[in-house]
Amino acid sequence: MDDMTANATGRGPVRCTLSDFTVDRRILLLTGMAVIVGSLAVGAAWVLLALIGLATNLAWFGRFDTALVSLAAAPRGPWMVAIPVIGALIVGVMARYGSEKIRGHGIPEAMEAILIGGSRMSPKVALLKPLSSAIAIGSGGPFGAEGPIIVTGGAIGSLYAQFFQLSAIERRTLLVSGAAAGMTAIFGTPVAALLLALEVLLFEWRPRSLVPVAVAAATAMAWRPFLFETGPLFPFADNPALPWWGLLACVGLGLACGLLSGLLTRLLYGLEDAFRRLPIHWMWWPALGAVVVGLGGLIEPRALGVGYDVIRGLLDGHFATAAVATILAVKAAIWLVALASGTSGGVLAPLLILGGAFGSLAGLALPGSHGFWALLGMAAMLGGTLPAPLTGIVFAVEVTGDAGALAPLLAATMAAYAVSVLLLKRSILTEKIARRGHHVTREYGIDAYEFTRVGAVMTREVETLAASSTLAEAAAAVQAGRHDAYPVMDEARRPVGLVSRADILLWMAEEDRTAGDTLSQRIADAPLPAVHPGDVVSHALDVMLADGSGRLVVTDPASGALAGILTRRDLLRIRAESVRAEGERQAYLRRRR
Image 1 (cartoon, rainbow, N blue to C red):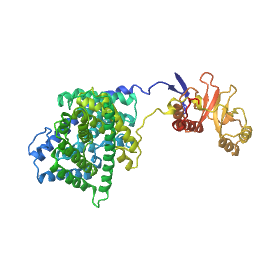
Image 2: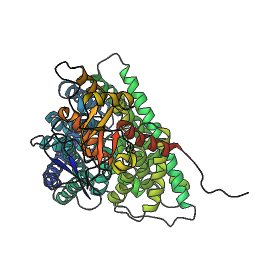
Image 3: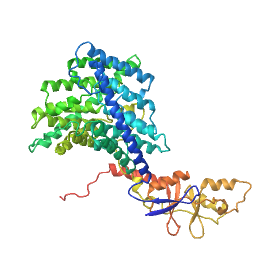
Image 4: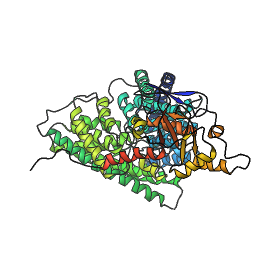
């Protein structure tokens, strides 16, 4: 349905096309640009992993090699404490004299750039974030590479977008395209990367952003076999035949993971507050946290570094119960302290390890293999802590290639998600943004202004003035009336102007004019901004903003006759109705006594 609406600028009518989606041909341009951004992000992911491998081999084994290695065989001794401290000192210096935005796991910084920074990220972040993360992780930091590559890929997308004349929304699309492509390159999970973009970064679910981000993730997946290993990163397929109460057990594990994720989030920001109370500059905090990391490495060296070998071992069930419990305790402690200290690293891999270890221990009392329950624990911990339940479910399927566990994954992850949103006002991602004075809402819904028609809320009984009326007659009518503004009508009952009480009184006070002047002599010649009863209210709001007024005349699209008037009070009624629908509870079907 096409409605013609007068333009407030006087340049002719504006076409208001009502359709399911707001998208135009620029989506094709953004999709083409997303292919380039996705390709660049894959290269950045390869460089990041190579840097992490190089830093790890140089720091711990004294060899020049870029392959990712486990720190399980790292020599224990004083150097196990000294190496993390040296790496943290380097990161602290880079953050202070380079860019403070490289601190932390990066996703909150990407969210903040999207929400309040116009999706503009600096070249410093694109360069220093992967380098600082490689140093932090390579020197033993208990982090993954996914957080840094999300920021690095996002920075690449943002920088590329800044070379072109694009809107903030279009820059956001390319920023998130780079982030999704980077995550896909690391884990080989394009659908989970797309869902993470939707649940965490995009703050909308629209074709204009969904399609380019999906194309960027698919592009990264196409490049992946040339630079990374093919197939699932952690192959797994050991799904037991659960008894009738099996799904209840999955829900129980999810509830427990939700409680654990809430505890970890509170502990993290409690430790961050403790660091802030220290009487030293924040540049030195990572070094203090690294002391705890090194001491934890003396207890369990497998808790250091990215830990992909630990994830694989938990799924395969290769660890003894005591080792799993030790990994869980040590990894949780050093990860919380290191992250709270403000060093550089990611959260996804640590959450997978913590959830996997917790699920493996819970599996001691549950049917099936330890690896199966470790898989559910990983998804539940990821979905509950971020919180991004769809990402957690699909990520577990894609990273293992195991689609047979979908129902248990759904039960466990959604239970963890429910606990998390009930217990915490903010997540591990948004709490940091909130502490900087910004509020983030993670709930998406259809805006009532997008589907409500003007005819449903407009004022139909309207007091009008005739264009042929003199100023004296108009002033008398206004004095007897009860409104602040009045449509001015021609002989055919079509509105030709809109005058306020203040306008008429001001005209009457002018000495160079007489009260015998008519309203038609005073109203502007430009077309009167108007909407139609069939227009959606969101379009009427756009016309209001363009005109700078608080009310619009509503006309019949066929005859142009006045149908009503739309005011700010009418707009507030829509919000009031939405609030009433949320809070008013009533039973319509009752059982008779």
